Image (cartoon, rainbow, N blue to C red; front, side, top):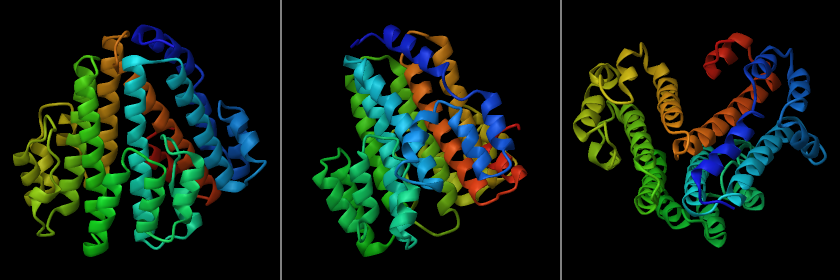
Length: 338
């Protein structure tokens, strides 16, 4: 193992070279149907995992299992050949994927989804073991799911339990998501502060907080809610004043965001494009950090974000092909110039 980012980053460059190429992604987009899509999957880095997944599942579940298994294998290798600061960074970033899964779990159960629907919503790209994810999907309700997470001794278990208790009294799903985000970013900020990896890790945490605040402000615009309750502290470029302006004026207020990493939001033409624009802005920010310091933490940050994005595209394409979604619609949802 190594505590040196130079060594870890060299290994990452090797793994990046085996990721999905634009040509492969294009072939997946162009595939005629779900079966043709899975033929493409079989020729990618997800192929061996898909072969294994087909032995115990079929259809979308087999693809989902393959995507999760491949990403877990990649992140597992990262964890094994690193220690010290790089290891801590990887472990911390994987908590973000866990948080996304817990939010997906809450959304699905809030909507009355079946165990199968909940299972399909979970990406399995974080640190939560597959057996625990299965028990979460089968839980009778969010309170039972919180108990499952507590038994698994997950770092976010206590925060999830508190959020679920509040939800039981007010039914506010957005508060559940924000409570999870608050716990995640507090944990990430604390670890960034005690891990000597330079300023980029802390800046990445702040950027994600800024992005969350923008999206939250848009969600509560015009609903007469107490803005203070929904604002996350410790961002860098989206102040409480900016947050309140978005809450008051909605999408139009984004035109004032002319500085910082999210400045491109000032030129977005519709509210429907905001989330995609934020993802693009974060990718550009990560690319600059990775290219600016090839021996720094930015390479790890970018690689794990790219891998999560790649997995999300595979899951989206799988659903599109399975349900016969028009190619043009898929291209639009992917944000892919196919």
